[in-house]
Image (cartoon, rainbow over all chains, first blue to last red; front, side):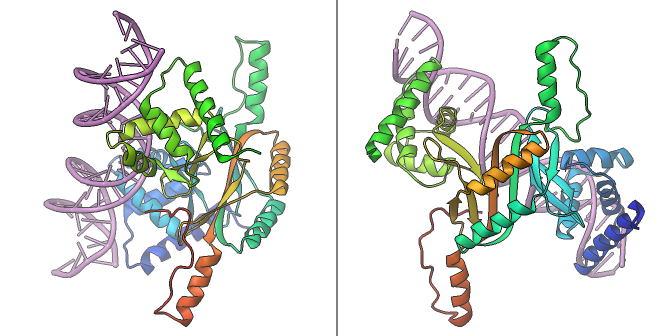
Amino acid sequence: MATRRDRFETERKIFIEHIRSLGLRQTGQRELIMKTFLSTEEHLTIEDLHRLVQKHDPTVGHTTVYRTLKLLTEAGLAREVRFGDNKTYFEHHYNHEHHDHMICTQCGRVIEFYSEAIENLQEKMAEKFNFRPTHHSLRMWGICVDCQAREAEVHTAPSGAQPRVRVRSAIRK
Amino acid sequence: MATRRDRFETERKIFIEHIRSLGLRQTGQRELIMKTFLSTEEHLTIEDLHRLVQKHDPTVGHTTVYRTLKLLTEAGLAREVRFGDNKTYFEHHYNHEHHDHMICTQCGRVIEFYSEAIENLQEKMAEKFNFRPTHHSLRMWGICVDCQAREAEVHTAPSGAQPRVRVRSAIRK
DNA sequence: TTGATTGCAAAGCATTTGCATGCTA
DNA sequence: TAGCATGCAAATGCTTTGCAATCAA
């Protein structure tokens, strides 16, 4: 059974191999940024990751984070996602099955989902237009369960309503 | 039967009503920008629209185009779309049924499509997570028919291959 | 006349690039 | 030692804002 540690080592090897294959160099900054990225499960912006990285080494600049995230993406370990707030988020990509997103416009929570049936219909649709798809993106915006509950609470008890959940990642304006 | 002119008049009235309801004013610039936008069927960027508007009145600034497009969007006549090239495109929204997009990454052609079945499955998916969706966006990137043909031509007759179609709107880098 | 509108210039943001310095291999 | 990597500052590209002059109602 693959442990968290196994997966990390596998992804680390892929990253190093990617760097080597391009004739580039392993550096402390790249190692730190990769490690930090791989040890999260959130949807992170560059700014988020930069902040996390700086906790371990305040001298790392944002430029390097940008450049390293590009390498991680090329290596197939990261994937760019956009949720409509003009920020680029990054999520894990290696061995993560393809999925789509529901985004709560109230609290920013991101729900990942996958539907074989939708995928199939998309393929069919593409065929209909003789379109050869390479990738796609399906996003739904709306209100998540908890925010619906919160809304209801506000209506019945305006003063004491408290958020019930800690959201995975908020969309910041 | 509704003519093109009828539709224009209807949309014009909606725009004017929207402006009035906010206590704002009708101006020559707003009229011109609205007219120009309504008389296209393309996916336009602000820059595109600004260029078109300036053909009739070179003194109109881009700021006014931004502000007027915002009003048109609020009024329900325009809708923002993004195709992944970091530009905001605008398309007609009033009385245009909801649709999704296939984007050719070769020539930039945009194909609009609609699938009742996909919409239904999305609703079902949302229900499963108790998510209350307000809107969504489905985009597929890939190669369109004509670019597939062009590819084939290049392989068999490298020198004389010519684009066969005029694309609706190219994605500019 | 009042206050919204306009266009310019400048500011904001996220992201990228130029470059001198530092560091890996 | 060669030349890639880094971080800063500056540049970029799109969009928004401040402001004085202009114009609709």
